[in-house]
Image (cartoon, rainbow, N blue to C red; front, side, top):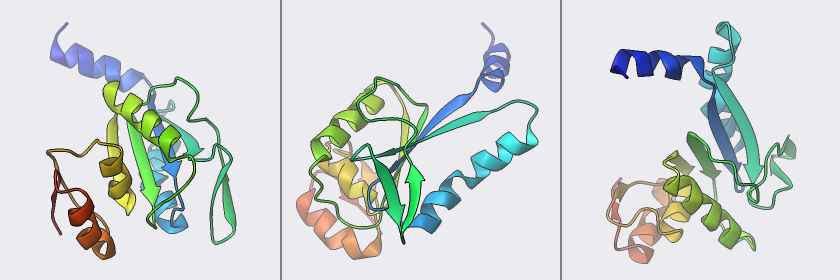
Amino acid sequence: MQSHERAHLDMQRTFSIALVCVEPALHATLLSIEPFRAANRLSQAPLFRIDFLSEDNDRSASLDKVLPCTASLDDGRAYDLVLLHSSYECSGHRKSALFRWLRRQAASRAQICAFDAAPLLLAEAGLLKGYRATSHWSTIPSFRERHPDTDVVE
């Protein structure tokens, strides 16, 4: 198949996005999906399907606003893009389930983007070894100390 034919087929399919919230900042979370929402609105067909997930498979909240979960870390779905949000260092009881899910997404070749303090979660899951990464400025010193196998930059 020619590359232009493959690109045309990609344009016809709906890309799947997982928005995973672990104590997120609501404004950053919603802003990260706005371009995809706008593209869907302007296109003749849905280009992006966005599922909301949280580490507790229940809901994600910030400032008492709730984003209902539309998918679970426990299902076997693979995504094209994962947007991981966490505004605070997380010590949740479901971290192991989140880490398994993130590793499964990475193994299925999903593109994974982590916002704010979420790169710490990716590092803890073992997904940043040998990579260059950054995080919220307040977490950089502890990030460097806890994950010396990641090149942490400002």
